[in-house]
Image 1 (cartoon, rainbow, N blue to C red):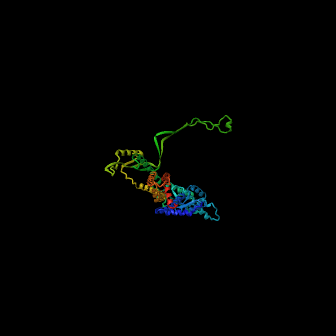
Image 2 (cartoon, one colour; image 1 turned 90 degrees about the vertical axis):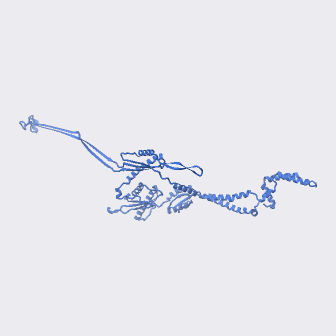
Image 3 (tube, rainbow, N blue to C red; image 1 turned 180 degrees about the horizontal axis):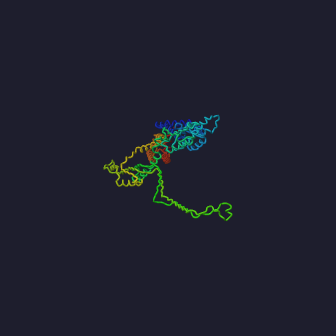
Length: 554
């Protein structure tokens, strides 16, 4: 069966022309609203999600990365003035980074030792020297970027030529410019580490010839002058500050458990002796002597003279002795010598005093009182009593206990001259404006995150209230003609029986003109069945009557 589009169009046009004016206006709006809703939902549902691939890229790196993404047919978009690249879908972000890293992207502003990956013929010695300096600068920049808190860095190195005369030799120097992350600050040890890192990477460069600046032009490794060198050492001052901060933290943490958090503030001043000396003493005790050594020599000479022969072979072979000197000798000689050495008692002492001895502590502690709620005697608009927050100072007994605890915590020593002062003063009430501002900012951010959903939600309710709800009402509400036709139809069996009784009475009053050609009982059954069908299906009955009234057209 062939579909006649012309007839269908005529029927639709006729149906539209027979509609009331309100429905004629609502029907095109319904069609346009449905199409717009379908397009919006389809666009919103098919909108791709992006994930950040790289941020804060240089222009050259961004161009190279975009070219690689185009070759791999990966969807991307540029934000933050082209410095941030986002790709879709987000699940391939890490895989794409690895692929780009294998290609050496992003390279960054630093050019390192990869300058020699490709051999260049014909380059002069001066060009090689410049490239070597560039490579060292780039490698140092990449290394310094690994330090926490540094977001960007530039390194400049000067390498003057060596001179054959030592007096004319100029040492190399280096300058480092650091861009720190927001809220970050380098410690003194980190700054010294950067200076030694740069100095250790360049021949003949010393840390004193390295200049380090931040993005605001502040000199970070300022070399102390001679006057400053003669003054206090920074390391000693830092040691003293650490001692004071340790005592203050100990006191505040202890009192927080008693009075509550933020109810006590402690400040400690420590007097530290950084002098260092060595002392050696040697003492002798004359009353205490000990024999160390003793020597005794005794000689005895004299008596009769002795005989002697001439030495030689003859005297040795014969028994006779040759007389050398005869006669009586003089009187004998006696020599006696005795020596005793005594050791005097001696004591040797060596005293070495190390620096950093704590000489005195001065402790000042401020404690807040308590706050209690008292009745003001007034009532609010609901009739409830009004309470007021009132400050109450600590009792003297409580202050004495706090003082004893503080003394025990710092190791109070009266011989050392320590001082501990406790004062009970009302603290200034905290200003909650900052907290309220932060909460308000968080609320605004959450609201801004929901802004993208607001147009869709508004359009959805608009379509429901303006389009779908009138359409549903139009489909379920019968027209005026249907209402009139339904009124003409019998309401039920009782009404139909009443009409039949009326007809019977009319027929009985008429003169008998013969037997009627219509069976009354059959007509009653037929009307009863039709009435039941109409009661069960009123809309279909109304459409059928409309079809009859329009000469076979709906």
